[in-house]
Length: 345
Image (cartoon, rainbow, N blue to C red; front, side, top):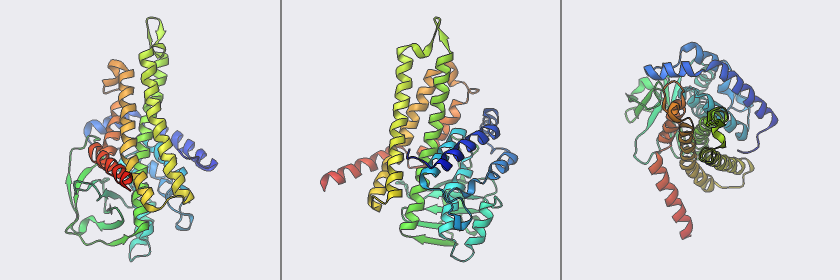
């Protein structure tokens, strides 16, 4: 990833430590087993950390963090499998309402959202299959639709239809969205809207990266401790190579994330080039995260497939992110089409 500020690095470390105390594997397993959200007390504690301000500028009451710091924090949320609805509010709904805040009635909603008094879901309306999906938190009242270059804000009570689905990442409130019968409360088209959508998708990719990075750390530690034939299994070539492949997949993703952050912050690229990088990372990062997580399951052998270990929780989240970003096949087709277009110039 791109080099974060010293303040951003300290904030990420502090957040990592705090979330480690709030979210434990046992609680996550229980919620997943029953397809329920985490207890309200846990969510309230996380909201109390001030996470809703990380993507807001200081003039709007936020922290004014640069993108390099924000992507690092998104990875920390992935390491601890923070509820997807909370992630969507932090990196999708709050930035969207911030750019809509000068429209009637939006500013008070933004204040309530950042204070944790209002829940909102986010849906990407730019999928190749034409469908839109959201991970609506319990008690959600608002829906933010993010298109390629358009934001729409809807109240659920104003005709938005949500069809609940059985998501692989259970307990997250996956629903199919139909907002055709709803008039937007507010909307915006253009470059600012495209930027909100691009940075939201980047946060999703970083979350998958963080979830996979954690499985690599767990696997490396386990491989040094687990002994076979009187030696740690990390000394066996097959295991060492598997860990190396996991590391390579994640380091490649880290470099790609850092590149788009650098381009964005240094204004070295136009919108078309940033969109090209966004599409590439939407495919490549979740795919690399899957490679790392699947490797972690193999390193752990038989217990890697067990419910209690919890590696499947990370795998579920990575697959969910891959689905939200359009799916492996559709994003691969888009990357291929972009490549052929550039070659034809």
